[in-house]
Length: 305
Picture 1: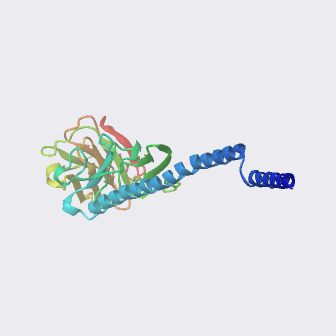
Picture 2: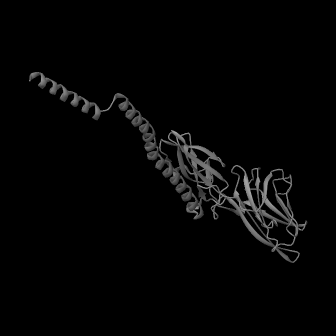
Picture 3: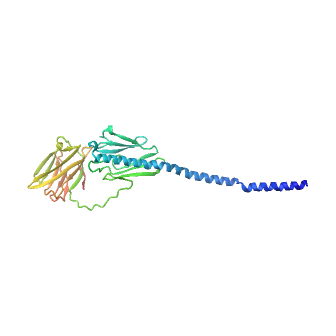
């Protein structure tokens, strides 16, 4: 009887052990599960961290665009009778952008500076076009600082935001397309750079109509908000001739001229010179307005608009 009980107990013990091993995990299975968990964690955790940082990149780009828009609006509304711009400062840590008052960052009124630091995880990495600043023109809100400002995450350089700035002063995340220019260029409007420093106190703009009718315009009498701003009409040989001359920047460090000579309002040849420049004309127009040229060695980037 005792031997039978022993046999039964042994059989029951074997059954329990079999059930235990059947319902448990082997060492190999545990290692496989742990490997899967580690692999998933290595993929998911950085992705979650990146998702947490991406809003900082997007928000920073939106804030920079907001500063550019504010500078443009202040300029167009002639707030404080001044231009405004935004300067990108990569020498600071973390990087900064500064909303400033003035025709350039170098000549700005420092008391009006509004600096903004970007998050330490974000940086400006490329500033294409201009010189790290964007300044807007009065009345039009356009800018000569065309290009783009690029931001990225420091520890994920592939994550970027690029702000494109067009000639019209608009900002976008999409590169502006260059429309096909089908306009007939008749020299009504010409822009050009002038590299020589103009003495605004003593110099005159000289207009010569038809080769012999000379009209002198004192620069000092036609300065408005730090820019040359003149327009006038002269009766030449019984016919009125109307011309508009102004600058987009003046001696900063060079000068950017804009000249309007609508051929519907002009019938005589025209040569424009500065009294302090003996090298030649700034711009010349034929009577029909179809030919424009210049002689001055200080003129470049001569563009019909």
